[in-house]
Length: 273
Ligand SMILES: *[C@@H]1O[C@H](CO)[C@@H](O)[C@H](O)[C@H]1NC(C)=O
Ligand SMILES: *[C@@H]1O[C@H](CO)[C@@H](O)[C@H](O)[C@H]1NC(C)=O
Ligand SMILES: *[C@@H]1O[C@H](CO)[C@@H](O)[C@H](O)[C@H]1NC(C)=O
Image (tube, rainbow, N blue to C red; front, side, top):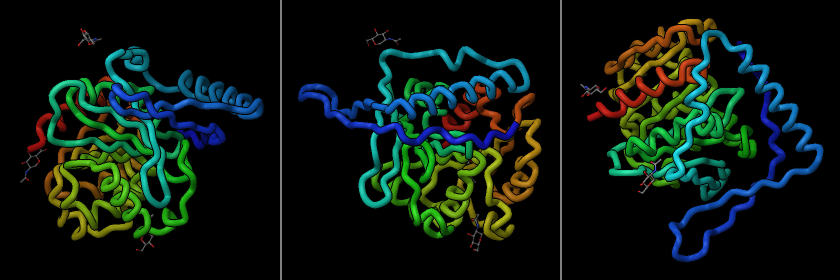
């Protein structure tokens, strides 16, 4: 099922600094008008309908876990065209790579919190950052995002400004419009790439894919009739890749099979050189 619903974007976020002595972090509060609450209610109802209508047995447990020791930070990237992001820091010993999560058309950074992906990565020692792409979630639209070069530069600047080290980029669906131009220009900056039926692969040649040495995990849902085969055909030209097909999962396979998704992602991350 393809969902083209947009989240209400009128929620205003205020950032409050913690008093001294605490670990510096940003606390997010939200305030909404009545029409915004109504919009949110409608959004939640659509959400519910969406999840009830998903194929296959749902894996509710990963939606519910919560580790009180994990704080999800939120903020805006510094500099021009700020983007909203959610971040977790490694709970125990830090790993060498940072994970950057993009999102598809019907989603935003909150998806990775709801799914427990951010929390799980923190538990497993990874720093992870989930972005709201321009025009989604709490990020304003950006003129820069209207060109291919602009999207690549925007992503590069965000990684630099957030001091992301040894980035592994997770890119589902629509976010391929950002991830693929970035991959083609800046793959030397990527330690790993996890495309999940991304858009825009048709825009690049076989030779361009061959040139990218970044270790890649190609993930897609068995039931995906939207972008899975089209993107796979192109991504197969990446010289160092593995392919995982999630059974009984559609285009947003990470939502349909979160436990399988998390297992496969962690196995890939844990084995990166
Ligand atoms: C949270 O941290 C405390 C202190 O380190 C520890 O005792 C407790 O087990 C942790 N809780 C969870 C759910 O991991
Ligand atoms: C595809 O490539 C063309 C030419 O390089 C570019 O103008 C266009 O924005 C690209 N489309 C996407 C979706 O990246
Ligand atoms: C290919 O990627 C794997 C990680 O998935 C890595 O361990 C291996 O070193 C890479 N091979 C080359 C030739 O870069």
